[in-house]
Image 1 (tube, rainbow, N blue to C red):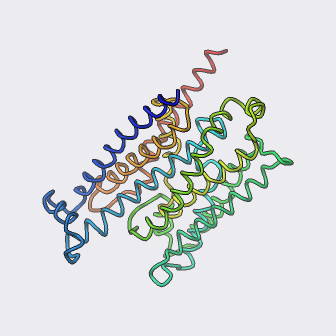
Image 2: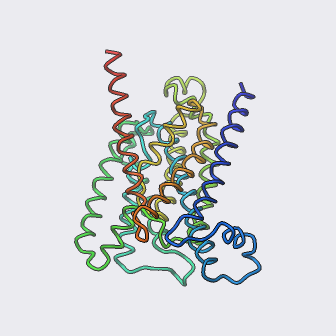
Image 3: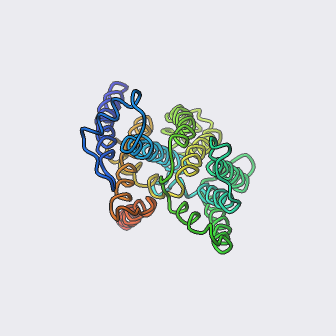
Length: 343
């Protein structure tokens, strides 16, 4: 059994790693300014020995960091989706369902309203405030949902939905009073990697790595939890503690991703579901495979956002929503058909 898991991990991850490398390389070519393949490889190969100018700046300071950030955000949202769907035992669950994204949106909106930019041109203040705001939102939701020492799944979901609706009301109020800052707030709410650079990648990497490692350490317990909380308790799993830490780590990864990219929905819904159908329900396989698949998906979603109406661009959140909404309806219809069949 263990050998089978290792074989699956190696096979799927090698295939997706190759797909990720190809996606990154091809994406460097895409954009409103055409740059030859020869020049792209020359720039990448000699970037340490030549001063950055013209096309080198486009490749190394604009396209490459944007592509890598899209990959990191896609991977982050995907593993968070795996965690939420596993702990809530609901394949329709999404990282945004608990309201942390709404918290990040409110924090970012307030930061933009106050005209906060970069602190000493090194620390991106808006992502930091968005991250803190989303983490505080998770704490409030957890406290609201808690009944004694337990967190019922249904209560947690309802608390997340209600808190999300409340925070979006506050965000809507920001739209009314934003005035000249309104375009910035709206564009951020729709999700974008425009104007993001290496600083944002450096900011996100530690959260992604820490979150991924911690979630993976709980993957076996999540496998047991998927059989039911009572069954997991009989097998020695500390159910409430496992749920708490899985939700905490998933929220950490989600809030960090949202804080640097804005609101990008449906990635955490679609990717885990698709991967689960391919690899099976074992979370030890789901986490790494979903990370690669999410990275590839969001890279190409961002490519579409850049080239569809070039030289202008579409917020990447619109692209993911156009893919995700029909997918969500498909899931609903599938679940409905299964319920009717059982009846």
